[in-house]
Length: 277
Image (cartoon, rainbow, N blue to C red):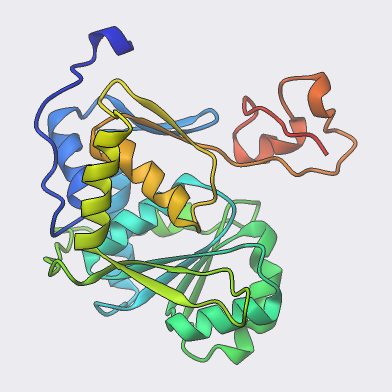
């Protein structure tokens, strides 16, 4: 499907009270259209909806009660968007955490938000292991990516049956993001379904997003400028490209001399442009 064959207008999802309606809506209307891509990995709307459903059931199967926080600590990865949508669908709250935080700041944020599940990128797993004894409420740590990755196994092991469908109130928290903590510890900003929906509707129109749009998400998803930017193209049924920066110091990374970085191949994104060292 090429941009000139895409119907750019049409019904949009009703997200005012439930941001998770985005993926269900487009899975019904355009199941085979590409929804999300990261390097060579790509998912149609039907595939993304299936993954979000399985993750919703998996989190419910872990005994996560409604309103609890699901923390995500990693550089940009499509899984962060899956968690955000699944959390909304299941009545949980996604908390995407700044991976640049020092261990003490990270411990503070995980304790402050009260995360019961943390989905942690492989390169940050050792840091979380060190501070976990101080986090009594953190019941599950799921490693994302790398040789010991558990995230895909979590999705594969999701219980069968009907996916829980939470019906949030408009002012229920949808997403909790933290400030940089310039003058102290980071502060948790609780963004509601109503507020994020209002921003998504207004901003997607202002930026001219439609179903033919291809949206590169380069800002960190732990920042509102990253997650909200991704949601704008998803809302209109466009293609969303998640960019994960290469920061390899390996001699295998040739920087600007070649368009790709072999050191990134473990993430399945060998076609991603490399920033170099």
